[in-house]
Length: 246
Image (tube, rainbow, N blue to C red; front, side):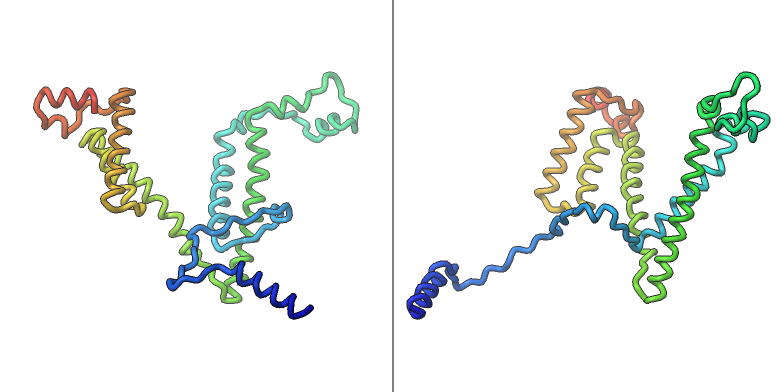
């Protein structure tokens, strides 16, 4: 019985085994990381990463900025409060009997400075508390020789300013070269910077940029600067045509 069972198992394994060819096929490796399944327990799983200190310092600066301008920009100087605050709060909570007409709490809440005051009273302590935790985590990493890479985190944040410079340059090029030429330059140079290079991608980006010009400038007649340097160098008829359609 054992020999029959083992022979049957061997035949089944040979039948189910994939056929091998002479050329080894390399395994497929995806460049995208596998998706993480988020559990309910992960919602409260808070961990301080290496860039947390930079973000915490930034939030403290924002909180102190709002606190510095609170007294001059929220109407705090023109606030209307009762003369005797202690008696006022005792009347509100029923500790004492009010004399005459009671001033309601809603008159204070509806004033313009009240909501910013609540926000500042929550934001400033929370930002300072978060900075304390971030600094302790940073000091712990430095103590045990773990990488902190604060400079690397700052560099990654500053790299985003490059794309702001791209669009600032685009807005400066439109009055000089016109909407058509400036859009074609940005629509082909920016994808090249992002890694879409080669003749095929150049043709795709060029066609997409030209289609954008046809839709927004020629079709929807989006306004552009009237005095364009490049168009002023063209003959009269061509200059008028370019100013109207491109």
